[in-house]
Image 1 (tube, one colour):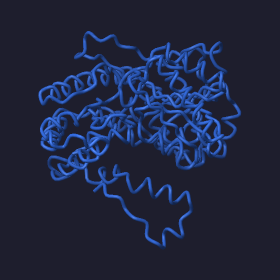
Image 2 (cartoon, one colour):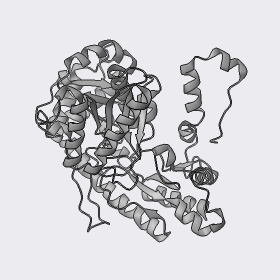
Image 3 (tube, one colour):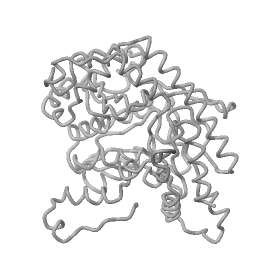
Amino acid sequence: MGSITSFTPQSSERFSRRGHNAFELGSKRITWDVISDMWHPQNNPSGILSVGMAENTLLHDTLLQYIHANIKLSAEHLTYNNGSMGSNALRRAVSHFLNRHFNPFRPVEPSHVLMTNGCSSAIEHLSWTFLNPGEAVLLSMPYYGTFIADISLRPEVVVVPIQMGDVDPLSPEAVEKYEEAALEFEARTGSKARAVMLCNPHNPLGRCYPRATVDRLMKLCQSRQMHLISDEIYALSVWNNRVDRDVPFTTFESLLSRDITDLIDPDLVHVLWGMSKDFGANGLRVGAIISQSNPDFHVTQKCLSLYSFVSAMSDQITTSILLDDEFTDKYIKMNQEKLSECHEFLTQLLDKHKIEHLPGCNAGFFLWINLGKRYLKAHPEKSGQGAELTDILFQKLLDHKVYVAHGTAYGSENPGWFRVVFSHPRPWLEEAMARIVRAIQ
């Protein structure tokens, strides 16, 4: 588990350069191995317990009850329906939902929406459409690890990770780092930095960007004519932090809700949302690009969207859910309350075992935790390992059958940090913490 596979001589000769790149990335990715051997207290007690993947299992029963009671398929769902960009009904449903919950300055229309089979496909489409191979997307550290492949693997675009040092990555001061990174990349390569990738609420830090930071990013993008991609997939998973009561929290504000005309050309702004996180439905594979002022982009997707066609079943399920205002209002509220409770419970476990965690989060499903500090306290002879420390801990965790997201893969600038996901029932979290503690002692 987790070992690097070597290319056979025959494969090395027969793979393209792109195939080589995919092999290098795939040989290091164990996520699907974890999913194939997931722990279950009765059915698979020797399996791997995951608190590394950003899945929200808290309301699965509620969502399944709704689906079983309300979803009816017709003959049109066995056809191509209205095409690969999402059915007319689905795009109307997404527009309706966003207009109710994202408070858009300009109402979202179905023609503004492109549906994809998840937000990874959405990001890849934007990267492929707006950037040439070798051009760059700016991404601040730490970051959601899969952004790298989404942006770069097939579009062959370069991701420029931006080191923040002692600067808060979500602060207005951080924007200077973006500009420095763009200038350095362009001077070094002769290629252009053409876009900024933003995750708001932030994954893995679990906080929302202040308006001042977003404004400065928009001004920077305008001055350099860069696209601003705002991944807002955790927009409605913002909750009450019951632990850090003295910390001032930033509320979530969608780019859709802003009058941006004095800050940036609106055709440079693209917002992402989907069903995976706020509705705990990763398996539906439903994402959306909302690009309100770039009709030419939507024309390009008439051919590209064939490769991200949403299943007719997922299309129908999502349409039904998003049009049911009573259900979605209740579901979102319940989800936020449960996330708040689970965050409080996990922080109590972490404090009990004296494991450092970053305070002040109020969004998403995760905590940024420092296992290196706790490990080195128990093993002072291991100090001085530097960047290797995270790899050592990651393997120890896997040996104890618990999967926690590798901090280095998420752009951590300091060794020993990991992302742990708390959107699971309490017995799941208790078992995960027991395994984590055993691994680092």
